[in-house]
Image 1 (cartoon, one colour):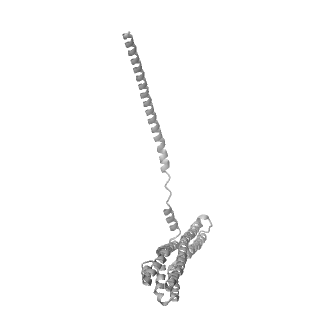
Image 2 (tube, helix red, strand yellow):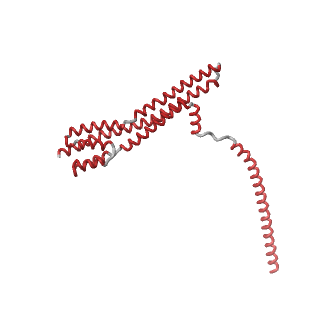
Image 3 (spheres, one colour):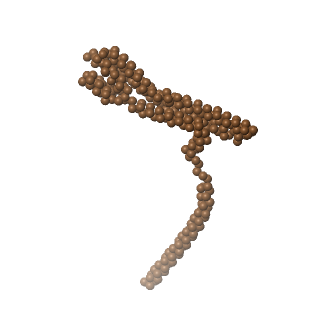
Length: 272
């Protein structure tokens, strides 16, 4: 009985061992076939990808916006295009200078008026002058003029504020007329280039004795390019101009409102 059990046990172990060996051999064969298939597929993919890469690399990269702009600028001719470029440079320089100046001229008028009122109550006019001297901007300059005339009466204070306010407004508007000049000048130069380009096109027609598109294309292209660049410069400068004018109007309105409040504060202090 024990021998029979041992025999069946040996048969079972050998059976399971053989089955495991067969399964392992099948797995190895399958792996080899998969590897072979993968290698073949990779080789085919590589062979197929090589022409695709060559096809993808064949077209050239499109030119950048800077390159296109430079080419069109040169094609438009250095004469009028250079003048249009100078109008843009000078207009932008003045615009940036005005924007910086106006930004520095802005001040918190409510805080300044509150400081002046507290100074008048605590230390009088001299203390208020110190507060104004420590504040930048045109509003503080106007208040300083008013405080300097305080001993002469409220009438003189109002006159000095109005007079000096006009001076400050003129300083704020300084250079704005030059921006408007460049805005008008840029498209005019472009239109002049258009006329000259058309004249060149007709000269080419007269010289060739033919009205084919190839003869007049160069002159017409010059005409259109100068107009386009002139209009672009005018549009850019117009945006800056409108921003600057709006900023000046805001500062002038703030000066007028704060000046009225400043006079009221001085009048109340004078009554005391």
